[in-house]
Image 1 (cartoon, rainbow, N blue to C red):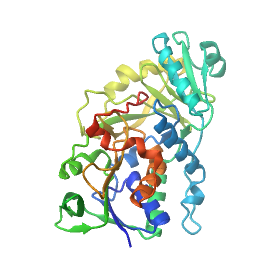
Image 2: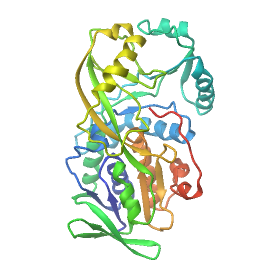
Image 3: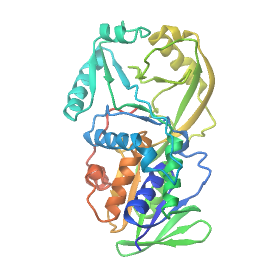
Image 4: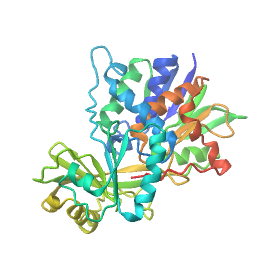
Length: 385
């Protein structure tokens, strides 16, 4: 039986393990240093899904993943236990001032060419559709009409793990620290407790902590842990039909039941591995709250109920995932560095990686090959939020 060892049991590792075991009959072992997943991006993700990207590969991955999420109750059922992922599709709304309107129009052309159900709205159209929105400084909005929204990411992670184990995969609590190699083949992974695990193929799926494993193979994976704060807000405001809104400032918000979730993009000057318990309340007071109140006047009256932080596994090379065989090795692979869109793309990437490892074609992830790091071929993603 073909044996595959995955290093990292977050959603990317769990999805790949699930498809390897379910679809290809592989004997799968997943090595995870923290079985509680307390700091894992999979547990702390905002778990949104969109098709408004600047790269066709990301549009295709999210579209495939959305179709999977819609039928996940059947795909990931274990006996009579059918996962409930709470998928809703209210859309994404990107807002632009005059300075950003040309870029939004250019992205719209690319997205429409790729079949994305998206429309451009002038300020008067925005005001008519979303009367709670202040539009005086806006020139344009881009609204996803279908195929965009959010879901329960931790539930998806649990469902992939449960399905993988039901299909024979085993999850081992250990920390991978090194490898044994023979020529261009990896023969075993060494763990901090002194144990070793062999296999026919090895996959780095360690999210924000993938770089040290790449380094152990002599490769520099430019993947860094960038903290992102999310604020849970209470407000009496009624924002009828509210999508996930991205302000021109980069701040964003979306409804979560009667609450709002809000935050900002990762900042370039943030240190790697910043403590997750150090919530930047100054970001809320000085930037987020004034921006929200200006964009939605009804949000002047709100309060912070709670907040949390999680890591983006930020690929500093081009803000896109690394998925494919690692350069210089015949049987070592990676699926990491998805820079904030890993949760939403995990079904498509896991399915594709399983096919690739099984020796089949995997066109969905072909453009994300780690070989582009050595080639200096950037696949820049402009729409990172």
